[in-house]
Length: 206
Length: 206
DNA sequence: TTACGTACCGAACACGCGTTACGTACGAGC
DNA sequence: GCTCGTACGTAACGCGTGTTCGGTACGTAA
Image 1 (tube, chains in turn green, cyan, red, yellow):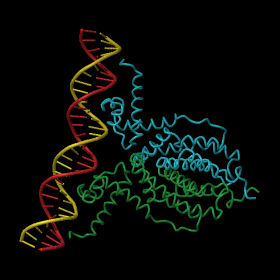
Image 2 (tube, protein in one colour):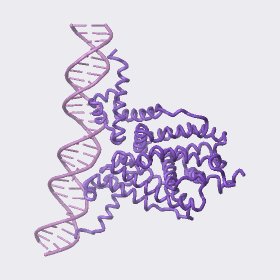
Image 3 (tube, rainbow over the protein chains, first blue to last red):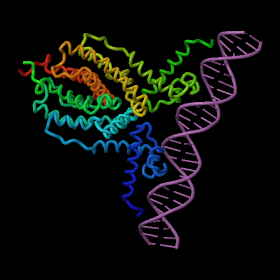
Image 4 (tube, rainbow over the protein chains, first blue to last red):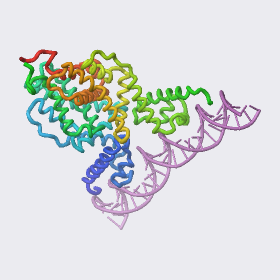
């Protein structure tokens, strides 16, 4: 057997780190074999030993993006219902450097995804999964009476929450000074508060 | 004086059309001089007579995007207040082919913008302008009592509305089957309805 | 007519890209 | 010992990119 068998995966992790660094700085449009190789001080030929083609490297980059998103540190899920939704959406917003980098890379990937049918389908599936992970908590919120009388169906609520959150992400990425952590949090709380629709928070006008 | 002086602008319009076509198909990542030249059956050298460098052509593409966005056909603005907000946001959503293409190109441009400091500032300024154009109508809605008691400040309302709308745009672009025209409209109406917060629609629980 | 400046083409340039081929080092197995 | 397969590095290839350079056609000005 050749050298250490575990080294292979270790090397791929090094490559992942370099890929991540390049993506954070230049986005997918600037993801190039030479840039990745330069970021880890190796030759481009070495990269090809671990990723035979650039398409493989891009696929790995997207995998890496999805993995790091799935395995990011998350807040503890409190009670059921809207509070959980709030926590999940807070975990998405670019409140820290890591979240900012991750969101930047996600947004950057949309250019590629919109031009490639397969990648677009992947992205659509990701959105579906995200909405599906949110839906049961909206169902619980409905059951617990946390939502106003005019509340929409859980599917639509989930889609709206995702829309609001990602739209806020994009604005915050382009204008971080205008959307610091507390502003983002306040906006999210107001959005969720408006779903509560006149019950609970500040008493009604009766 | 050389040939017709008006021809110059006419030619630039032709180039604009080709640029638009390329952008709609390949996004900014696929915007290349040869692609544009091929789209109008001319040589790349001809392009350089009207746009000396690619950076100039990219700048023109962004200008074109902004112009076509500003000059797109718009719905008539009804009364003051939330109804106007609704109309303005409906004008943004990808409800038709033209709006879809425009939104695709916008999203595609974010990859470039996030990697370029100047372009990012431009995009941030555009968002500021969009929020500013929305704010007075939220002010009017507040004055007319169209918003619930717990409504946030007009600036924040405008930012939230933009967030919701653009987040919905992105989801609709990637999954148009799941977000047809009526679903988008219903989601927007529900979002605006939740801002009304327990007054007007279905009576409170008193 | 001559001179000139513009519009445009076709070919070429230098460069960066993804990819490939060749060469070397080195540890494992016989 | 030798062989072999893996892990690289080096150098180059072919190609597409943005850009440049002569060259031609043509309408205007003198």
